Image 1 (cartoon, rainbow, N blue to C red):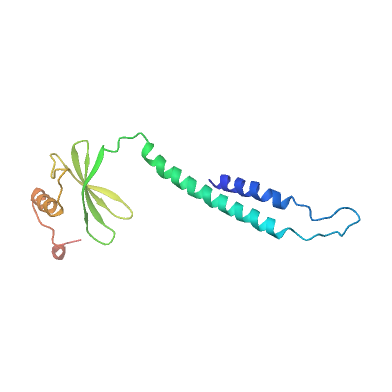
Image 2 (image 1 turned 120 degrees about the vertical axis):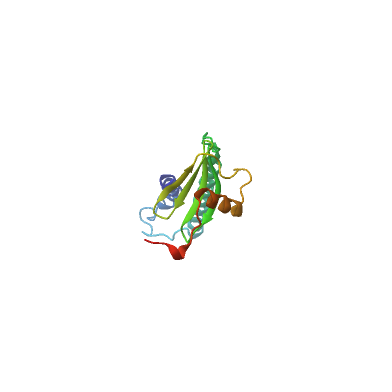
Length: 147
């Protein structure tokens, strides 16, 4: 994309740079530049570069859906925020649900459920928390934590 922008700017700016600044032999050695032509050329170049940028962004957005990959293979059933940047996510992969701990630096598998805990089509956050605590068999209490 950078090459395309550089090429477009060189092609647009080439006529401006190719203008002669020296007059014919025997005349004044420097002539006044064509300021209106230069401004119009530079303005057209700017508009062309901005149009190329918007065109590339539109094309990239249109091509994201054309990968041909089945996006239904992995489903996020539920996500629960634990802290400012930490989350617990229940993900369904191939009919099996996996509980993941997500931090800014790592993603860890907390538990792999043998049978689905929550129906992927009708997952509620309070229902998820209640059923998860029932499956684990204990409730989490931050004051009794021993590190």
